[in-house]
Amino acid sequence: MTVVDYCAMALFLLLWLAYARITGDQQILSRTSLTKAMAERRREWILNSMTRDLKMIDTQIMGGLQNGTAFFASTTIFAIGGCFALLGATEQVDAILKDIPYIVQGGRATFELKVCGLIALFAYSFFKFGWSYRLFNYCTILFGAIPMADEAARDPERAMQAAERTIRMNIIAASHFNMGLRAIFYSIGYLGWFVSPWVFMIATVLVFIVLLRRQFFSEARLALLNASDR
Image 1 (cartoon, rainbow, N blue to C red):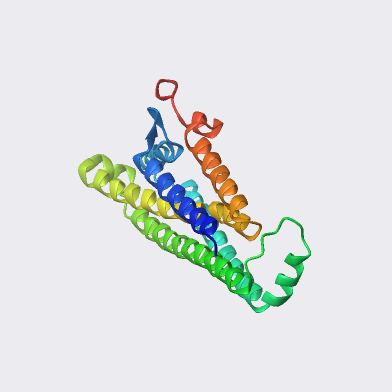
Image 2 (cartoon, rainbow, N blue to C red):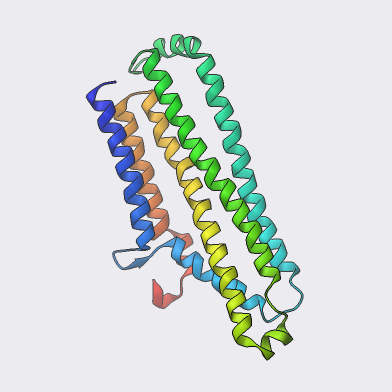
């Protein structure tokens, strides 16, 4: 590996941590992030569920959240398997890459190291999705502990405590889901390393910009906010 490769990897990690820090603070240029806005909508949904005894809609929403998380967890497992298959065919892949122009060749060891890095990305993503799925499962149990409307009216403090527990668990589960999804997005930039470290850096910066735009300047964000919050 060359100095440029190490610089590209350092930039990748720096932008990864910077994005996590920026979205963790949940504001940039006094703009509310999409993640924070969605957390508020989650709170509204669960508090609204306390006004009705029939919660079929709520259970369908919870099921949809779990199914989406399970889908991505399964996808990352297939991706990890594909990466291991790629390691077993290093010589064939290396021969193909040599015939492609503009590909910077670093040798077999470098190629295998890059693939191992990709495996680490997908493994991180899998653990985040797996934990998110489990937390959403816990959330369904906590949701079931929310009192019915009549009981909530008689003891609002107990009902609110149960709702707050459910809200916190739901937001934490969504946070881990977002972390896993972020790893998949950044893996797209990582693939540029197989071409050259310069492509790696450019692709990583583009992914960083796209993700920031979606968090703070997208139409989806505007759809979630009130006019006074924009």
